[in-house]
Structures are given as C-alpha cells and as structure tokens.
Length: 78
Image (cartoon, rainbow, N blue to C red):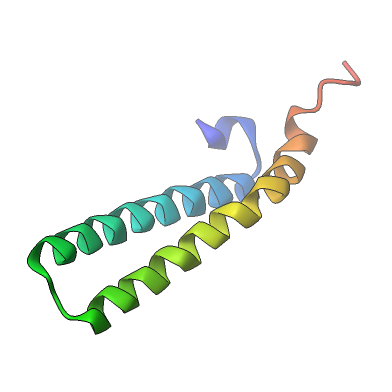
C-alpha cells in the first residue's frame, strides 16, 4: 500500500520498521527460550544487548517518523 501513497524513501522506512520489529520479536523469543533452558549467561547477555539496541532504535523513531510522514500526510493546505 505504501508504494501508492508515498515515495520510495517511505516505503523503505516502513520496510525497516517491519524488519526491526520482526528482529526484536525474534530476539525476545530466543531470550525467552534461553531463560527456560537456563542457557549460558554470555548468550543471555548478547541477546539482551540486541534487544536494547532495537528498543533504542524504535524509541528514536518516535520524533523522526512524524517528520518523515508529515510531508505526505499534511492536509493543512487542502
């Protein structure tokens, strides 16, 4: 749907949001399985670092995403 409403930059951005969300979900699932299996602390730490990085990226997107979409969705001049 994005390709009909926005330029390629937004389509790519939406793809990145989806990809990072999928990555975050996958890492969370891996971490849950590790805790259930009591895997090594080193492996748990590595996954925790990945989760933190993805959560930080999503947090940074809150102000950025508004700016990215505004030029396409601004109806103030209609």
